[in-house]
Image (cartoon, rainbow, N blue to C red):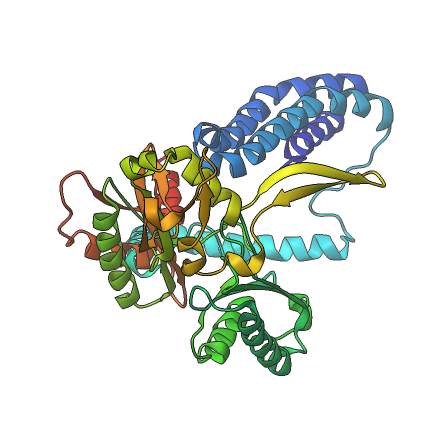
Length: 459
């Protein structure tokens, strides 16, 4: 494609040279004679990529640089064909012998090309004698292709066999980190014993902490597996994911999700977005969508951002009672935060490193609800007041996370795909979603890769 214009110009210069023109005249007339045709040919190719420039979304990020690269490359190739090629032809070609058809001793390539030309010419002559039959056959083939469209799947991003797999493990909230580690060791042993020959590297992250929740993530574990290159193994990434999922799915008390970690899409291919104000209503709608996705063939690892909730203790301060004890609302909450979450009092520097000095209750005095109830707060008169005397402790199931889109609360239900294409599964899900009785002020829609794919097709 890059040299087509130059080939056409150069061939015309040869033709002019054979007609007896001097090399300079041949270069001048050969280049100018076909300039308009070469420009038109290049423009027809460049125009094909023009619509991509106006595409929005992720498709623009991926394909717009490619389109611009092709257009600029063709433009420069055209400029070279109209200027540099004729100039170099007038300087470097000199006396050139051109080979035409009918030479007595054609080479092997010429003989092969002549044979192909003869076969094609004979076939073309036969087609011209049965024009109506040929046209009817082409129309029938076109209609047949259109009839096959409903049976052809489509997806936003092709599956990549890059050999990167992640395993998410979730035990019951509050599980000791030692128990989580024991489950992780079982998973590691099963995977390495069965697929050690195709696993290049595997590491795990167990537990975590943040803020009040010093051991909030002790029930979580995450594995990352990097397989050997695809050319050195017989099993694909998707097959590995399916087999490992079946291998470790029967570990009691653990919710395990195995997914391909690589690829260009990122995240789960199926995502249903539920928007509204009330978290309870969103949770109910999310549960209905979960049941729908679990009943669709080809879905796997169905999850909701609402989840089952996380056990929490709410400290509800009785402001009037607190005032009677000489305490303000802020004093009470500051003492709770200081005792259980800790507070950075100062910094310690040594050998160029800086360390936080955090003040909090000893670990053994801030692990149970009873510890919170017996927390003592000293008022301005020096009197120690138990927290239970000025506040009520409520045990609730708090939301795992609260998402917002355009300032509206949102619950996302996601799913992976096994054995089917994104397009057909999305159609089945949309058909089931349309049957849901959605309250006023709430909406249920497809997001994720499905939304991006629809935006690309619409643009």
